[in-house]
Length: 355
Image (tube, rainbow, N blue to C red; front, top):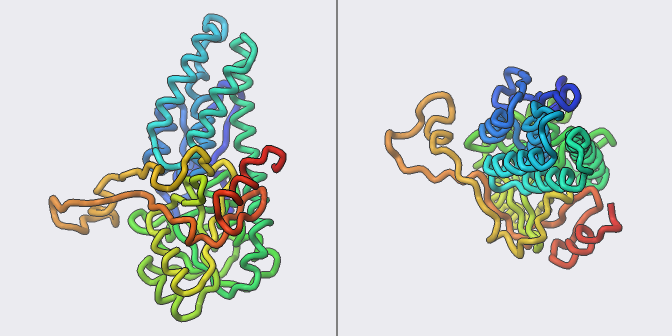
């Protein structure tokens, strides 16, 4: 685990957000300070903070940053609520795919709207809600690890893609939480880490986190996954998720869909790990999930130097959607969803009595 927290709120209602600048890893562990809502927006957009749960937490604290300098003596509750709404709309434009961002912003706006007509009370309620979102994610991550570890306990090798560890959440992670937990329980497996082009979250972040935890790790290029599977090196594939539709179709880092197709061909179980707030039950299928398009320079100049001809046309979607029929199970803090169908998802995720 990193020596610094992925995200941390410093101070009281007039404080600020500190976060690990993940663009500097693995060679530098640097914490950056977000003093304005614009700082938080830029941190999310520039991937200084990334991972669906982590950007939701960052956005929640972004609301607190947005109102921290308001004078409670001269600012009315209506003015504060208006400022919160403006900040929420602004932060929502940072990245379109991860539903946790919008879920967290909705939690924050509902919180301030339900608070008594007192500006000081509203500020306290907003920071309390942001911290609750942060703390709840910690609990969910550890529960995901406990629920998913038995699925891979006997595996000799596991492939993962992108980064779904402590850096993508409050701590411990989703997919990596399962790997950490299984390892700590005595699992004797090697994790094959896709480098995850074009921004190398697998090689820069996941390999680093696994090695910090003492988990045996082998880094592979994305296009080596089929060969690794064909050689019998892995018995499971596990990734995180950025948004899951009501039928189980799952958006995750670009390349996840291809990995699921390969896993099906080689008869290897393919698991998704995600908290319940990653489900978007308003969407009937993955066809409705908005897919973020990233800057072409991430591909043409992604290695610190130009790696493509001038003026080449580039297609750079950040995510793809894996159909539910390719997913063996979805591991959540509430339990394991298998088979992955609209009915099984409704039973576990939509039932308010299950926490």
